[in-house]
Image (tube, rainbow, N blue to C red; front, side, top):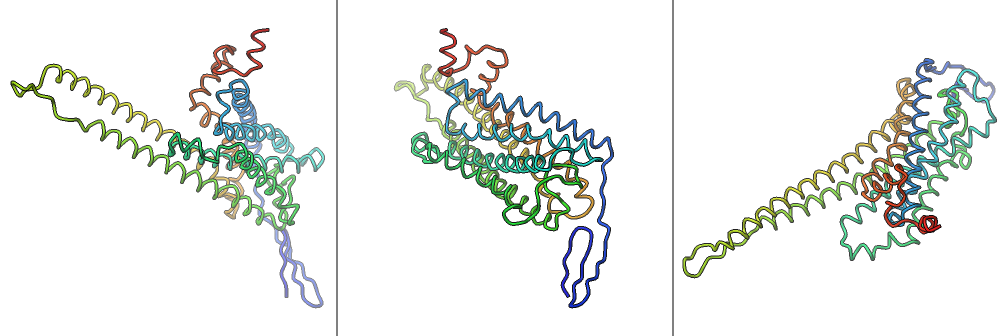
Length: 371
């Protein structure tokens, strides 16, 4: 006797008869106020994410100083996050059409589902690439930095092609291998993948495996190495500063000269100031790394846990966990761009309409000014 399972029935096959036993699936519903809150939050994400990510892209266009190898990944992150938030209105429409079902052509919802998967996967893997570049830049000397093949044009293009290839492949898995089906999901009233498909759980596991472990391990490893490197470097500099030589003595009295005492006092004051500055730098870097890691864990972990856990509780929590994941696309410009001093300057110049203060302006801006 063989057993095949779908979402509502179990079918028992023997040599002569087919017996069907229908089992009612668990139904999880959302109150109207919950749907309203979800739609409002998505609307906030659309506005803030569009504004922040557009500002990052525009800054790189207007300032040549920001066109560096590292910022290639920052721009790619902004592009994927911008596409993510611009894709959200389709899910807002799906939420509001919960009772009637998807009101437009099924292909529109399937396309929106594929775009959401592609952009989110690309965003998370771009975060991992940013972690790698920061690790390389901070832990290598300036001479080594110039010779690193990671920042060559061909390598940058290859890494971007790799990230987008993984993202597109993830969205094509249902069509290529028959695992799940992208489109309108009646359980969540979203454009994602159909949870009633017999192999929906398999695709959920694949999504979780692709989205979370690899970027998570890379980000944690790189930032821990960055933190330990900076901490070791600061300790070394502090020990060098505190190591002071003996005072010079006059040949006649065998006592320190007045000039030597003043010089020693000045050096002591300078050493104390430098040690304080190094301590502040270490604290600032530690805080930034802490924000990066916590942000990734808070935004990405809940959704991946909900994909793997069975039961009504996980089903009920999934839409809210998805909001945390989407929130990552809105706050990335704040974390990865505003910490950069040149980004801050360009942001301020754009928002105050003072393009003359943009450092190393693009050529077309100079042409416009001359004209």
